[in-house]
Every structure is written in C-alpha cells, then in structure tokens.
Amino acid sequence: MGGAGMSGGGWGTLRALRRQDEVTAHRVRPGTAQRVLAFARPYRREISVFLVTVVLAAGIGVATPVIAGRVVDAITGGAAGAGRTVVLLAMIFAGLAIVDAGLQLLQRWYSARIGEGIILDLRAGVYDHVQRMPLQFFSRTQTGALVSRLNNDVLGAQRAFTTTLSGVVSNVIQLVLTAAVMFALSWQITALSLVLLPAFVLPARRVGRKLAELTRESYVLDAQMSSTMTERFGVGGALLVKLFGRPETEAQRFRQRAARVRDIGVRQAIFARTFFVAMLLVALLAQALTYGLGGWLAVEGQISAGTVVTLALLLTRLYGPLTELANVRVDVMSALVSFDRVFEVLDLAPAIAQRPGAVPLPAGSARRAGAGAARVELRDVHFRYPSAAEVSLASLEDVAVLDRTVSAPVLQGVSFTVEPGQLVALVGPSGAGKTTTSMLVPRIYDVTSGAVLVNGVDVRDLQLGSLRDSIGVVTQDAHLFHETIAENLRYARPAATDEQLWDALAGAQLADLVRSLPDGLDTVVGERGYRFSGGEKQRIAIARLLLKAPSIVILDEATAHLDSESEAAVQRALSVALTGRTSLVIAHRLSTVRNADRIVVLDRGRVVEQGGHDELVAAGGLYADLYRTQFAVAA
Image 1 (cartoon, one colour):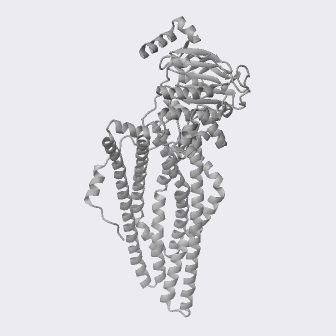
Image 2 (cartoon, one colour; image 1 turned 45 degrees about the vertical axis):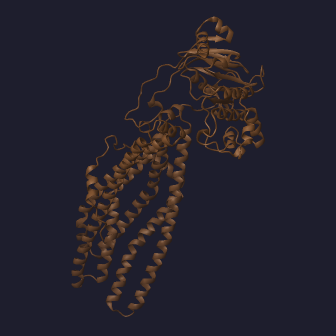
C-alpha cells in the first residue's frame, strides 16, 4: 500500500535546493498547437486506429469490475444454475482479458509508429534546416545545446502524440463510463466517494506544475552538460585541458553540474513519490467509505454484495483518470514547450536561400584555360556581418538576450576580376577582409550591396548546388571527418571509384604514403584527422579538391602553419590542383604569391592596390611594406 520511506538527508537535500534564477518558464508562442497538428497529419490513419484501440481498452477496463460483481452475486445468491453462471462469467472475463491484451499490443505498435515517425520527421527536418544556416550561426551556438534540441526536446514532442494523447482519450472515456456505471449502481455511494475529490485533484495540479518546472530545468542543464562534453571530448579541447593542467578543475566543474542534475532528479522523485502516496491514501479512504456505506446498504438489503465489490473496484479506476486529467494542462503545455523549442530552430531563417527561377552556372570561357574555367567578378561589394539576433537564439548561446548591434562594415566598395584560368592573390593585414571576400564567391555569405558574378551571372541568381559544385576550397585547417580516407575523399564525389581516388592522391603527392598504411584507403583518419600531420591533412584536402574537379579554386592560407618540408609538398600538390582553373589565393606568406597573375591588396575592407608583384613592390605602397617587413623578419 505504501511506498519506501524518505530519509532525513533526502528531505534536507530538498530544503537546501533552490531553483536556478536563469531558468524561467518557457512562453509558448501563438500558433504552436496548429503547427503540431500539421506534423500529425501524415499519421491520420495510424492515430485513428490508435484512438479506437484506446477507447475499446477503456471500455474493457470498466466492464471487468461489473463482471467481478456479478460473479460475487452469483456465488452469494445461491440461485439454481449459479455454477454455470459463474463459469460463463469467468469465460467472458478471460475473453475480455485476451482481447485487452491484443488491444494493448496494437496500441503499443501504433503508438511506436506514430511516435518514432514524428521523431524521424522532426529530427530530419531540424537537421536539414540547421545545415542551411549561415556559418555565423555555428560560430555562436553551443553545439551541445543544439544537439539537445534534436534529442531531449524531440523526445518531449514525441510524448505529445503517445503518452499525452492516449492518456487524455483513455482517461476521458474511462472517467465517463466509470462515473455513469457507478451512478447507475448507487448514486449515494458514488456521491459519498467523490467527497474527497477536491482534496485529491487540487494538490495533484500543483505537483504536476512543479514536476513540469523541474523537467524544464533539467533540459537546460542537460544541454549545458552536452556542450561541455562536446567541447572537452574533442581532440583540440582535450589537448588544451591537458596542456594547461586542468583535468581536475574540469572534472570538478562537470561534477558540480552533474550534481545539480542529480539534485533535480531527487526533487522529481520526492514530488512524484509524495504524489503517489497521497493518491493511494485518498483512494483507500474513498474505498473505506464505499465499503462502509455499501456494506451497510447490503446488510439492509438495498444493494447486493456484488454491487459493493463492483463499486469498490470502479472507484480505483475513477481516481486515476481524475488525477491524470487534473494535470493534463501541464502535460500538454510541457509537450507544446518541447515542440516550440524545436520550432524556434526551424523558424530561424537561413541567410542564404536559392531564389525562385535560379539558373545553373553557365559554361565558362576556354581562354587561357580548360573549357570549364570560370570568370569571377566582384563589383562594388559591401558587406557587414549580421547581428546575433539575426542568426541565432539566446537559448542556444546560453545568454539572456541576443545582441542586436549591427557590425561595422567589413568590406567597402571591393571590386576586382579573376579571368578564366587566372591566379589572383588576396593579401593584406589581419582583419583586412580577405577570407570574408573569398567566402562571398560560394555564397557562404551574401553581399550587403554590390554583386559577385560568376561567368557574368550574379551568384544569387544561380542554383546553389550548381554554384558550389563548381568551387573547391582548401583552408588552413582542413577538416576531415572521423571516417576512412576513402570516405573523406568521396565526400567530394560519392560515386568515385578506387582508381579515381588513387589518381587524386597521386596528384596531391600522397599516394605513396597512403599505400604504405596497413589499411590503405580504409585507414580511419581519427577525430579531425589527428592521426595525420598538418601537411598530410592538407594534401588529403587537396586530393578531395582534385576529385571534385571544380572550375574555381579558393585557397585560404592553405600553407600558413606548415613547416618548410610540408609546405614544399603541399605547394607541389597545389601546382597540380590549380592548373587550368580560376584561382583565388589568400596568403600571409607573400613569397607564395609572387607568381600570381595579379595581386589584390586589401586594407580595412577596401582594395588599396592591384597589380603584379614587381609592380607593387616598386610602387612602395602597403604591399611593399608588408613584403619588406616579412623578409626583414625572415632575415
């Protein structure tokens, strides 16, 4: 009848805890419920069958106490043929039990179909949408918080269509049927049994609200812990922790957060158990009243003993639904909160979108290059980064309010052209806008004003897939997935054969090294490629670029952090990669761009010089200053 006792230490923990100030109730935005129904629309047939099984199971739940009462009446009545009646009723009872078991299985199967289907739709939708978000979104967002949206909140949304939906329908049907049968059997006993109802329902609602608050707080803490683990368990994060001698500090910080999650779990367990014990106590008191009044009425001959048994059994099925329905608003709101947190991510507008009527990239000119080379032009380009409020969510950054301050202009009136097959270098001090300029070509960012044109067409009027298929990029920190060499290379061309992979590796001066590995192409590169040196990772990235065979190549500090030997190997690979292609190269080491067809010098977001190496050195401007400074330092 009762639950396990609670130690004094547990109650002390409950008293010692206080709700975190930064965690507040989530306000569900208008229209969320309608959007939820839209997700349910593809599962209308499954939901209909599911609800039918719920209704039938609720009906059986009310029928079995009535049959039990009839069995008692048959036994105590002593009428002729009572034995056959008892056997018949027992067979009906068994039949209903079998049907109920089948209904429960069907109910669970359809529940799983609906719930898992919705999880798939939500996760796939969020994942696809997040992939379209601007790069600044990923630089601002806590990865763990974002992953939590795809896990915890999606699971919370799933419960809206399984536990909550089935619970509401089942409890309403069971409550109506139970109350109707009880009043039909004895309105006096039913009325007396419901006297304790207010003492039961009102506390139940308060406990339900408190549990919902604790659940929301646990979601926030889970997201914070996920972010911490994501950052610290990466190779770079783990290396930083070790180099600074902080493992104990990190372990202590994580333990503190985990302890907060534990404390919330303790509070949830206390509230849930207290509620269960209170529910059981009230139900038992109501049963005592039923047995007392029912027994007296049975002795007086006003009702049968079987009726008393039926009423007592039905009473146990009355308080459960009442409890659930008392908390249904909290349950529904919790589900809507989960949906709304998912919708928050889906409602973030991608900064880069394909325009209606976008066209494929036109064929390039054959002048000075192969037939696929393209012409790139930046025409009076201005650019500023969007504010945090334009690209992110406060809850994903773990801040109270997002900054709405507009950034200062990063590029101002930038204009230059890269003819088909040309190699143009972008140079300038740090922060001049070189990388930003290069990222405008594949539309990682869009210009604020002006235009970027490829083969004479504004990139905003081109199909995104067509544009990005024509561009290959190698950065100073080439990213490799924790997969095999072959899988990393095939990211550029999924249908590539092994022979094509080896050709690309040969062009990147890496084939001999890969052949010497025990697993060859099937060698797993490790987290972010940490099993390979910086130069080897760069050459894998160049091989991936060669496999893609783009008409435009962008190199962003591709040799910035390499030693002389690695740089020489990468430069040999790059000479193959750039042949016959339109190339935009960013470099701090000016010695690597001396042979460029043209050098564009940026300073504070403006083009301050253009020309060849010798011409710019002779001009005595910013390029000459940078060049002399580098060689003076080298000397």
